[in-house]
Length: 473
Ligand code: GLU
Image (tube, rainbow, N blue to C red; front, side, top):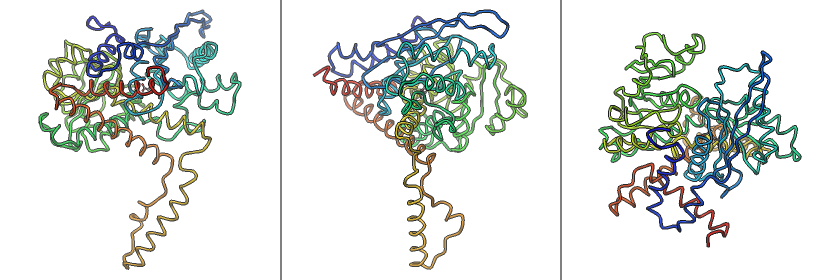
């Protein structure tokens, strides 16, 4: 509970704010908003020391307007039914915003993974999957999990193996989970997809001169100072791609402390240091931020919360100095903080849009699994050959000879190229739609912020699906 709102209530408050700008029947809006089904299950596991422990797990399927439902599985001590329902709802809106044809779902197990051995985690994950199978909460056309906070491709492998063992239809069973390792029918580019999507989204938002002007910023990512909270899969990749986009990552915050260097970090080197030393703290040449919450208040152009929900609150919002808050995490801003930040003229790029890159590439992985062919496999050689033939024709006609470097730029698209291009397109398109909605409402004198605009677009897309189903003629 943050500032009087449960997480799911917060999501619904944002929904209601947007719903008033639409004229759908009340019943349809209620149907979109409600969580269609959720399931809490408990099971015992035997710890390595022989003791028995009860494990609590959940899976919520927020919306069945489009199937399968989709969303990650998180391992965290904060997991409870309200959190899982809120996150499942965010998945519904997220998919609609980037036009990925899934309903939203989310699952979780209430535990701190650091307290369990690898083999305990494997037993827990396999048993959790078994429960999902028993309750019909998993399947390529039913509900498809993915990694989330506290889980990775390792857990996805265990889920896949458990599911395939029990699946009646082995042909498409691979598509029961996404975020799998490449060797197990995962897709190139999935691991970094959420972080990459965050950067594609930021690039697009920052490219619009007239939107940057009131923030006192020049267009483009180049030279912008960034503070990142969270250096897990999402935070690390967002930081890495921001650095590659010429931004300056000046602050990195983790649970046990943060580091600051106004010159900007080499993100790969920080990650290497953490792998060796066990923590980012103590990174050479960096100033230590003992209380990572203080780091949120650093002077910077872009603040990227990439950890958990409820990080920006009524308490710290008045002191946030960033011009842009880029929500890589799900639900990092409380409603009270949202209001304060908006009032202070800080631009919030909302989670429902900005972190949708993960599920977008999950969609590509799912499609690849169902089609049983690697993206680009059929066309790559053909593109390669025709493009090189074209180069030779240009050389012949002009007498100019291309250098080896220039020649290397030409190649048929492989899987990662296609994944990144599909992701970039989804992020750019969704941002343009979001901005168009804002502009339309502004011309009617409605002050619609980015989050509300994103929700309005989601509501339209979901309502359309329901209408196509003939449920609401
Ligand atoms: N857990 C990620 C999210 O919150 C990805 C979900 C998925 O790929 O299904 O968006």
